[in-house]
Length: 378
Length: 93
Ligand code: SF4
Ligand code: SF4
Image 1 (cartoon, each protein chain N blue to C red):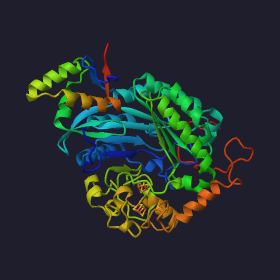
Image 2: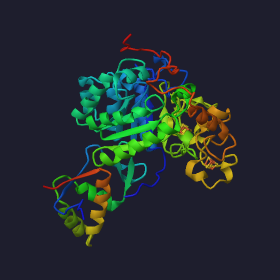
Image 3: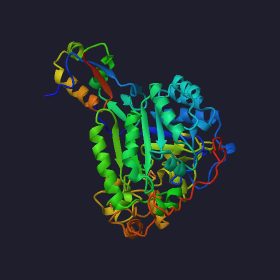
Image 4: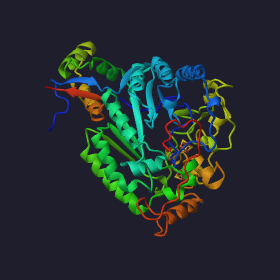
């Protein structure tokens, strides 16, 4: 057994739609959303999956927006499964009815990942922008009942991080097989809401202690994965195994990307309606832009860690400095680190945006209306 | 010492992982939600025998015959690693 690096992309993330019944203020959707009428058709998605298989893709992740809003989801899962891929559904679970879930299981869906916002309805529903908590819990139970392994994704931030113990109680109660407690990454909407979302150092220390204890307690039952926010790290996170090296994302309108956030970068688009996936992967300027280490500026160029973190995140560099070629400002060696330090200082200032439960309401800018909002409660 | 891989235990692949042949890279792989593990030929042979019926002892005997050498440690170490990631479930009653 070895976990050596394989050539070619291993996974494709199919963002079937930008439409979503929720409107989370840390959403990683692009600021400009694809209209439903511009989405790839079923046949186009099938072709994309076929081409991905030719490239050697072994896993397909169906996400969005909310992938359950695509009526052909069962079809597409069945297609990927027929190609021998490991199929994963990333969902808010709103709209996961029993018949739908059974159809997905019959189509060969291997795994379900449910995102939850908090441990109780009021906060959960405020964060998600609609009333959704009970539906999520119900759906998570259904996932287990139908025999799928259940992964819960919790995006942590200033508003919910203090509730981590109670969130983990839900994880235990639902008998989740895995839980990913990931601190918000500050791109897109989350960056606009950063002041209200970035936790303080004290909050983080508490969360780390609690999740470490839970990891021990749940050992053998639930894998507890905790991801710290990189603003509090010395070095940036490596970019998904490298730009254009392990994963690819295909958006609703057929734009292919090396990563989820790259649509913000000033790079030429590559669309599956115009080119096939193998060409996009191997030859497009977009996928070649930051492959390897040749593109690097100093201090990365001469740094010992350049093969470890690959100069960090291009999207973060662009969003914080306006120049996608610079060293990720999270890095302590970056000349731009002060940009991150300022945000961290603000988050630790007692006068900063208060945590949830305090009397002063924090400012959260929710995602704008996308397209269909079938379950809108208000 | 806790014996995580008893010879009488019957290993099976966990529900949420699967193995397949990866044509593009010409190897057998183990696939899970967040993982792709490439298997060497011995690993692939061991997993192919993990059907929930055969015991660890059976697998050791079978592969020992096939390869004409002692494989006890190899099989047990391999299953231990996979069991610790919960990719293989070993029942022993
Ligand atoms: S460029 Fe940034 S957002 Fe994109 S995959 Fe790399 S680390 Fe992630
Ligand atoms: S200078 Fe560049 S390569 Fe070195 S640690 Fe910082 S981001 Fe990584």
